[in-house]
Length: 312
Image (cartoon, rainbow, N blue to C red; front, side, top):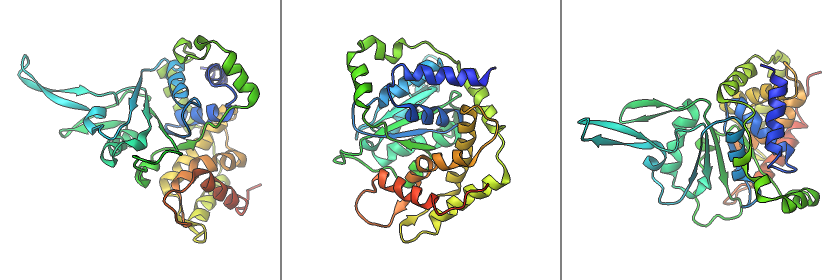
């Protein structure tokens, strides 16, 4: 398999419907091939759903969308065990969680109990119902969205849930020229359902295996650890630093980013450029307030990065 051509084709395919958001497209691919999950915080109408659907179409994978609401139950996501009278036995009816790409739309509108139904799935690619374990399709990729403006009737994601997302990004508004292209394009041109797949799910699994083989020198591991340690030793700005899971996620993402760049080795800039999107949602500011604005967290991470020595 020609890794470079496959990754380039995937990126180009996504850009057909996601105009002017190269960074968001690349970060979503990083999360996918690094076996992570993606959280998108942004206002409605900027392409969050389109990105998730386009990813599923591009890899020829199944796609399910769940609109999270306050009355959504865990069984609505995972599935339920029912009694089959014909077979005289109980059988498990799979929920929409059993898919390659899952869009958890407005995830913070569901109760913490329902949000937590995703924890085992995101961490272990499996769910346990009635003491029976059911594996999920591979690859399994969650794209969750939440609106950072509307807080009425929402339940902020707990830290344990946030920590399961490898990448957190915002789409942002397109530039004037890119928005012009969107406005004058026909609806069909912007429909993910009209995209042709450029990979299949088996090729995605092979890419995920290739990510693990990307080399990362000991000096860069030390650099990564110093960044993580800096988030834990900055009590003047951060109440909670990054967990070891966050460090593992940053290492995997750096390897994936290097592969996308056509390299089989990680460089310091891979770690530095990814850190704001990998670490900001894993820390808590000590500035108080009901909500920690994500962009403020990213500014703190960027400030800390300037204080950590970069290996030569």
